[in-house]
Image (spheres, one colour):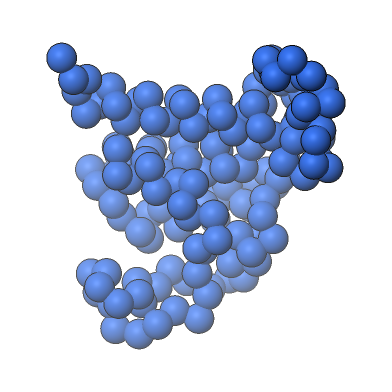
Length: 141
């Protein structure tokens, strides 16, 4: 029997968070760092690169904000999500991507300016797009 949609969504979110925490210590390290640390290929949840073992990175923190917004607003609400991201950025997270930080701290307002989005009328000057694929699974679940 196939899992119900809520189970699939929960599995996708948890799997993404675990994968993010497993890879975080190696994200900005040199090629071969994982193989050097785990020569047999079997890794463990470890710290490194400024991260504690199992610590949530900015990607997971933002994915949680997506999930909370979807649940609390009953669907995709771009202005609400942008406000959540902005409050998160203002709180001084341990890590935040340069483009994401530039957009969230710019003072610019949310704009539904991408073609095809409800209320769209013009193209936005700035947008958060670079890491959006990491968070799309929460919307598609």
